Image (cartoon, rainbow over all chains, first blue to last red; front, side, top):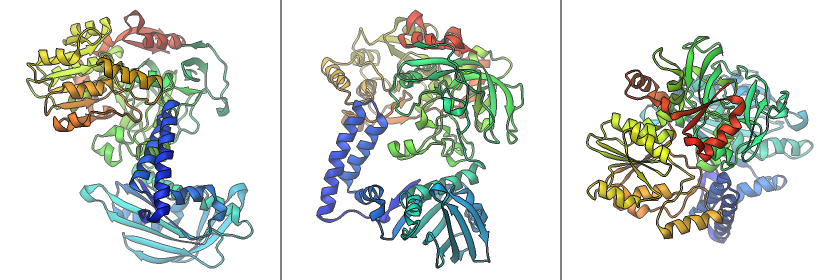
Length: 245
Length: 391
């Protein structure tokens, strides 16, 4: 599954150079810190940052947006991609039934079909803040493409596109989800922005991952509710024996 | 139920935890009858894998009885005696359809760790840290198995519990190591590491037509087992120079296939300068994975030969002799085991007596003694090859 922002645009100019060096140096420091702590994930992240810096992959915009969500008021585009081992027709049919989409976005509470092209969406923000919008289909190309946009007065105005195209060699279908939206301002806007605005890539990626898992295996693998020695699971935690090696 | 929980570096305790329940329609609950230690558990216990959480139940090589199943499990019945492959496949994604079960797209419920560190996420593994899904492990009275139809296999009548338990992990891992070597009749195969997986790689190499197999280790009991049980010639790297010895044994060619059954915590046994370098870096904690075996394999392998890597690596390594690897036109193959691909074949080999993994079981203990069992396994005391716990 890949994710992208700004269409994978490379950095240009002196700001880009500065950013690249920052990434290279920061990545090196992180890599060493990770290695020193015996944390290979951190070390690998550091290595990745180093490589991203060396290759000139844009990093500062997502970082800036993560750090300063309130300052971001420009339209944002985010894209996620996944290959699903299922024919395009099946995926198209599934997505076209908007009721199915509630299972892909955990914050969605209800999707109401108003007509052939219009639907009403209800979601909840942090602290149960209700978020509501109406959405209208723009273009629907059988087994290929669905695009939509939200109507006037939406709490979360956005445009969306989902694209289905056959993957080579019988690998199934390549699915791209693109979302473009203006993070909302005004009363309640910050809460909504926090919910939808700061981690859009992750939301798009997670939605496609859920779609893949539902379509391929018919369930979402989970470890919620499995036993452990942690008290939070409600299990009685009586120590039977303690030996340290 | 009782379960062995990891609570911190080298802090294992047997605790009372809730029983597992069916969480998905394709789950089964297995009553564990035997559950083995594995070398890769030592990386977790020692704190080399950062996504462990206090309270995690470890263990991934086990045999038991199906006691409960979800509504969509069709190939298993209550009462079946089964082994479960340690690495979980969903059975439906492109990788599983192509028998690359350890690369499963769907079985890891916590893919973010691996996507950040590796670029993609791979399969979930029982009791093997949250990067690999955070699934509860098998050192317990019961364990939940997701996608049970894909991951559980009925044990044939003629195969004993002590033989079958290792078909979860050690046997298919060793078998896959040999399989990836693409061994041809007449080949000489060298195997670094004479633990459970190394021993199984040696036996498998012979099954696939190897002319000679050379096992490399430093523990006398392991070298003896490699010789007596697996039919290998052996080299003690603490006593001989491995490069000189291997070239002497192969007319200067080097082994056709080199298998790494050691992984990230390799003992160097290398030249003085290299050894100094590794130890210095290790002392400064500048590198997590120690690539001593990899470097040695690249140096020793014959031109155009194959390196097959099943020893576990976690993160980044440096000073990797890429020039030697490229100019000698070596082939690298590696991966976590795709056990589901091999289980049927392995049971047939065991039934025909081509292969008997039960000798790996040197100690059988109660689950309550698991912390001492791991300590013994780690210290390789009492000629311990594998400790198996019986809850």
